[in-house]
Image (cartoon, rainbow, N blue to C red; front, side, top):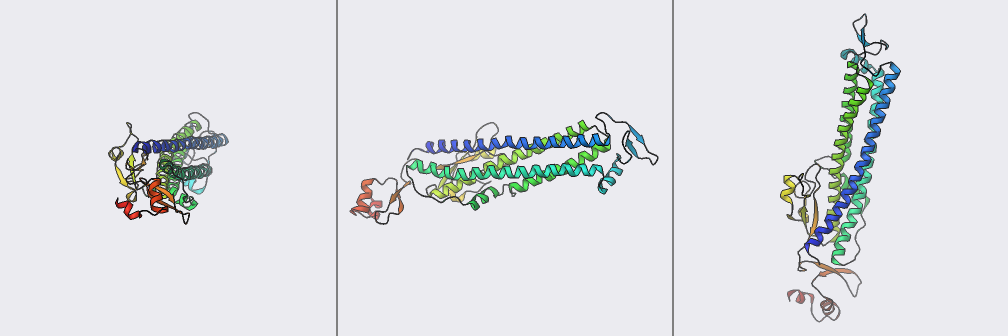
Length: 338
């Protein structure tokens, strides 16, 4: 059994490995949003080109009924706020454009949801096995353990952060973007802005949506990694305590800084209370905690009669094992008392 520093170093490297893996998914996420912004711009340019709105400050004319329209367009392209809202509700050209942009946002949310599911499932599965491996490696033992059930993986990645599963937050972000996109379209057409300005405003809003999506995936990676680590701790049968490990830099929250280095019983672990993530964008983690001596550690042994594995104290030598279980010179109880 090595010192606690061994465990801290091993689990710190493991956490960095999977947080880095999560960071790679941010690049893919950025590509998804960039692709959607490009599609937005394409649809807007097509709309303006088809209906004669030019890429410069437009001029207006007033119809006999007092309605203000853009010069060079058909009288059906209403630009006053009140009239545009009436026409939009009735399904005019603008509402069709809105519909196309909403389809783009729906596809974006679907792709984002699939990306997160794939990323988180991979992290959950690999972290579970790596956690068990690191503990067994530290004890220099090898034994069987439960294969991770796919249902357990699904449960881990669906585990709510702040009361909501990640898929719910993905679609909430999509719905918010959809409403904001509609508002920009209606206001832009009413104001008679150019297609370039319209695309710029929508691109800026998509950028805000990307920031929300980035925060979401970073928080979910932390949540999934730590849920899988906890499940791995439990599967080993050895880990009874964990140490809270904060990523200490100038962005570390006060709550994580206060928890850093504290020891908790594994059975009392509760995300948001004494187990990460503690907040949005949390990058804290944990490490298995053991006493530096072998006093409370265990190791695996094999029953000489049945061939089944069982645990014995790590302080038990092979000579002790032979005396107790093979030669039966001393009982296990007597050896424990000694």
